Length: 243
Image (cartoon, rainbow, N blue to C red; front, side, top):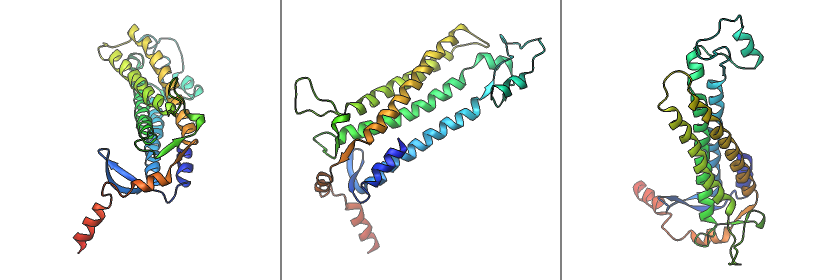
């Protein structure tokens, strides 16, 4: 998706668009500047997943029920053979906590929020009120009764799926909040939200990437909109200050 955004930005190097704060017109910006802001957010999302792996990649084998085992096993060998960084240090901690799941779900949730915000912006821009963006037929849907409609449904679904990913995080947070040490059967409920979050976030990224490769920005409509909203007011204020 990051690559798709960079390629999209390269097609519109000189296109100036209204920049918004509070969803009110603020200052003129280059479209690539806006698109690359998404790339920066996604880069941090990727970084969080990498950092997460560094913290969670420790082997619980040998913890047994909670008190370890009296059998002559080599926990360091099993950890190495299974490509873990090392064995977990405390057997009670190994069986009782699911913060490795929570951290991963939290990283997914932040990424989902970023994707949802992109979806919201592109849905707005595709509306007749903005008219800044046109999705191709391959990433649009019509209406059962209104033949003129060209809906950016994929990004609406991305926006909607973000609720599911955040919900998966909330499920496991609430699941863990009242548990005494060590293992409790409640913890078997961690798997379904984990798998659901992975499936959802992968689908969202795939859809966002495909959508970004099949849209065009309406340069004439954007340029005709620039005179409204006093976008150059800050530049004028700077000029007066310098004078």
